[in-house]
Image 1 (spheres, rainbow, N blue to C red):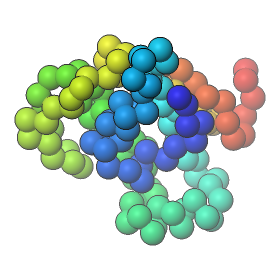
Image 2: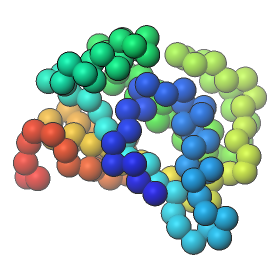
Image 3: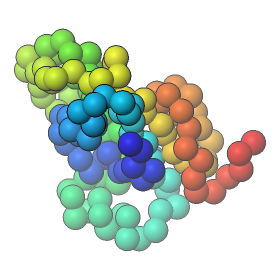
Image 4: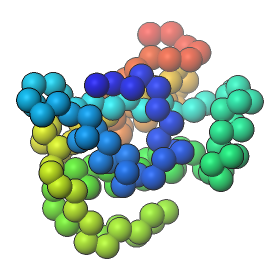
Length: 135
């Protein structure tokens, strides 16, 4: 299942890490998957208002998203983890482990150069969106 548009910065990463496990069919015939979209500076006012309403600083969205990726992947390992950062996790462990070893593939979206660089560094794929070209 792919969401196509998900603003992970507005969600708790522990609950977010658990979400694709709940979406997985019990037959295990489908892959877990999430698509995350980084939000560019030229964002419509409505999206900026969502950040404000959620109490999440818009200016810190990229660092927050990168830490969420790292925390989700740590939780998807199936091991007990300790995490200190924007969120604190002490001996946290997800059960059951995701069907896909290491967790679902994460795709980053966007069309600006920074989004492409993040997709290559932190994500498993790129979801083209927003300004820019496939090149």
